[in-house]
Image 1 (cartoon, rainbow, N blue to C red):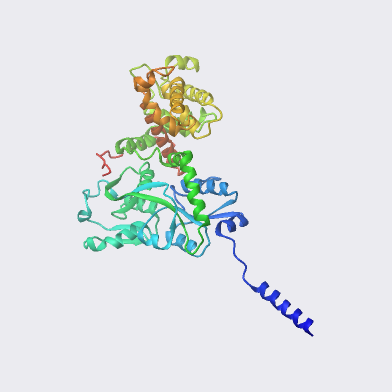
Image 2 (cartoon, helix red, strand yellow):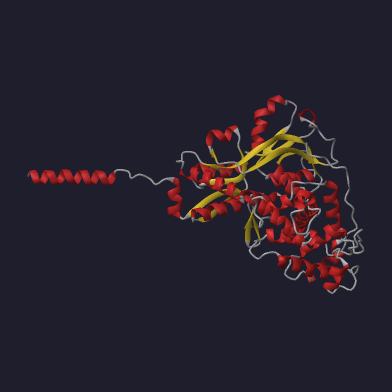
Amino acid sequence: MNYCKGFLTLLALVLLAGCAPQPQPDHLTQIRERGVLRVGTLLGPTTYYHEFESEGGLEYALAATFAEQLDVELEIVSRYNIKDLFGLLDRGQVDVVAAGLDRTPRRDRNYRFGPPYQEVAQRLVYRQGSRTRPRDWSQVDGEVVVVAGSSHHDWLRRNSERFPELRWRATNEHDATELLRAVIDGEIAFTIADSNILDMQRRYFPNISVAFTVRDNLDVSWMLGPGRDASLYAEVIQFFGELRQSGELDRLVDQHFGHVSQFNYVDTSLFIDAVQTTLPKYRDFFVEHSGQLDWRLLAAISYQESLWNPRAVSATGVRGLMMLTLPTAEEMGVSSRLNPEESIRGGARYFERMLGTIPARIPEPDRTWFALASYNIGYGHLEDARVLTERQGGDPDRWIDVRKRLPLLRQKKYYRQTRFGFARGDEPVRYVGNIRRYYDTLVWLDERGRIPAQPLEISLPIGSGDEVN
């Protein structure tokens, strides 16, 4: 009898122990056991986008790098609406939101923010020529439309009492890029845009003008949801710390935004005009002779060199669409540098040679930027700058590091240490930056069928342009 009681008591204890809740693994362990990192983001040119069979955007690049470090697969959960992203995070359907979002008091109360990895400003923008430029909120004479749930929306809600005459509304119908297009199309008077998005769009729509800066120096960070332990948060902090220390963070930001921050209204307008009126005359030659190159890159080089003027001549004697020197032309089999097709063919083969000279270990796109710099300044001077970079503790295989040292070739205390001596090292920096902008614009226009087959007789209005405050 006592034996039976003891057995029953033991059985009850075992059953109770089996029913007791087991401790749950922490958030990071769950991700690793699942084998998938779920990242919420916004569809857009600065965050995440599909391009043919590939994916792109700064947030995608960062998330893919983080997932690789965790040794898990990456699952991108994209939305058009910011509020939808918050809902995903609140319900635990994504592990982190990486969408170029800045920290606001409202968000700070509900979410954890990782370390900042980018800094943006917020600008009030309008269509150039549509009105007198307002210098402050008291001069804003039309409705301001912003994305619902955005930090712009939060700011207007918090500050609307200070500007009782201001008319504004928030919409769920359009994203930030679409609102910029609505400004250009005259559908709305004003919107507020983050500087990185604005810089990207002004390459295609130079008539977007800045009225004034609403807020400056805003940190952009990843967001983690409420009610979770700190395991993933700690890993995110470590990830960005290591990424920054290695220089990889600067490289990724530069790859996506480093060439778009400098904006020139006249230059951009003239380029888009030339795409419509001049490029169609030579497009077939660029396509035919591009070889392994992207014909749009070849066309961008040619515009930087000659503005697509086949009879261009410089003071130093370089000529034609690709501005070849006489020795280079002869070496490339070009009998007439002023013949458009011969110049393009010779320039393409010469650039391929430059590309082949760059050490094979250097990955794209840095390899192309180095080749462009060589095309402009010569491979010897580029190598001098790479040697200086290594001596100063930079990475000679990264364009972002070498770009900082190229201008030093103008200074005697530096060029006297080099093999090839003095060079106007600031010129290839501008050269590469301009070509990157022209190339990106050509890709955008080409993918949307906006490069005509025949030249158009049009002329875009050229104004003074507004400078950013």
